[in-house]
Amino acid sequence: MKKNIIGLLLIVYSTMSFSQFNIAFDKQEAINMAAISNYWINGMIEGMDSTHVDSEYKLVFSSKIYKMKNEWQLLEKGKDAIVIHLRGTARESVSWFANFYAAMIPAQGKMLLPDSQEVIYKFAEDSRAAVHVGWAMGVEFMLSDILEKIKEYNDKGVYNIYITGHSQGGALSHLLRAAFEYLPDSLLSKKNRFKVYTIASPKPGNRFLAYDYATYTTLKNPSFSIINSSDWVPMLPFSVQSTKNMPEINPFKSLNSNEFDMSLVKRVVVKHMFNSLVKPIDKSQKRLIKKLGKNMRKKIEDIVGEFDVPNTVKDFAYFPMGLQIVLKPMKGKSDDKLVNLFWQHLPAHYLYLINEQL
Image (cartoon, rainbow, N blue to C red; front, top):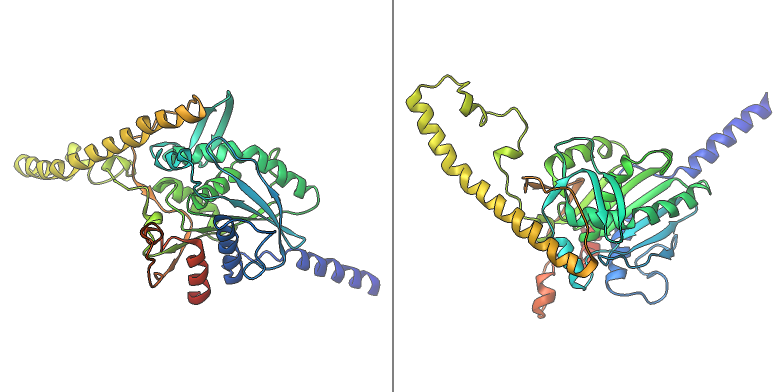
């Protein structure tokens, strides 16, 4: 009896030791995630910078460079967790074109990537959800290779996974996590547990994508989006919200059916006022979809080859994803005009602000 109790206690203790994967926000984890992103931006010397990144993080794999210049790394965090780190915008033009290819497509569907690579994708259950097409393509280019590496660690009994990235890498991190949620067990084990830390992430899709994401990342398997309140990148893409981007039931739609039982004169006046406000918004949204959809697609196809994606949706109401952790701005500025433009966006400064304010 005594031996059985001791054995049971040992099993419980070993399980507790193995599962040190706290769902709460962890300052030291956030510092390390920002440092990992910072190190890539500033170049590699040997391994990771021991003055900023804890020694338990070991870089073990760097991916190839994909067609839209996306890259990712895999780090081991101790013996029971791994980190998937997605690189932010590269210097090459196609990486910037991917950012500006900002028309939205449905969050689930089929795309044909260059070299005839057909992909069935799903980033949300909600049929109203829509996603940034350039970043959705970026994730799908990398997804199968990332899953292959995760499977290798699952086979070793490792199921705790961190996902992180700075700037474009942050948007890709949110979308990668969303893609993971809807993969079948045959491609990704349901035993895996995820924790996301994004640094200075822009907005990857519309409000319904963000709402869908929140249903599985708010209270468990959390996703933290760390932003600087004076960093302009998390405010992008520009967001133009039309009444057409609202839920099916809304008071503005009722103006046509006269559910408010207004007199004819009042109804005409109210509709005139309403149309004078809404029509310019619809026109702006239409212009953005054209400029950052069809026109930008041609620029990318000239570099990576032809591809096919679902038709863009009539939505440009971008919305942040993840639980926001907001930092106060960085003081000072640079004499270099280009550096100063990104002063509040630099991962090194995020690293500093996290350490000082959280």
